[in-house]
Length: 282
Image (cartoon, rainbow, N blue to C red):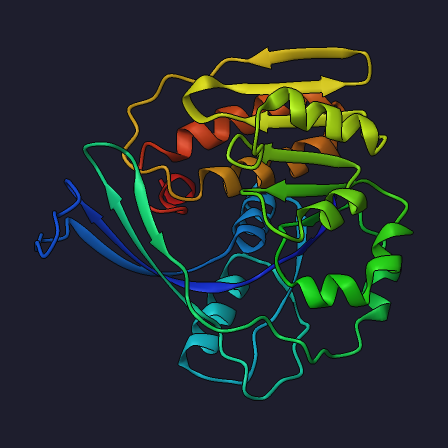
């Protein structure tokens, strides 16, 4: 069975689906409301487990609270192996407010306030486990810095989920073997990102571009995967779902382009329902 370690931030998402965004000072009635655990690495781990892999999530969960207990119960129900890396009794899982529109299939996200955890449990043994790959999501930066050498020494591939460019992105790119990033991550254009990967010795990478499909390079080969036509209701978490599906298929097949194709199909399917889980439960 494929086994993967996902390192990243966990949040509690308060999600509202509306027909259209309200204007300034406006009000609108939600078509649905949902409370769910979220975060890029968390969502990818859930997808990996849903597709029959064994997923371990290393994330800051903090002291017991209603938020903590909700996230733990959700992860356990999805068969995620949990490793709470945070040893700060004052740390609280952040809230994230999400409003998605049915008419446009777009969303607005307000991330929670608060700093990342900087006091950690001893997790050195985590990197001695027999994982097939590690995925990073550019969060839990103090933890990644602490175990930078362990991640760098990992024998399998390290996948980077680059949703947007951050100050820490160069450091995460230097850890990655396969960066799979959104077009928002590419500050200038795809060519500049390709040149950056070449400078870092990265021969496999992909850029997800939503309705414009996926660009990829694998050594001397490159190509484009067209988008999958769907009637999008909600694109929330589609990138996270793409990464979880890619990681699972890549573990199973070892075929980079095949894994990208599978991820492209699954991420598109997820947009036909609201939230990040409805496609799994349908």
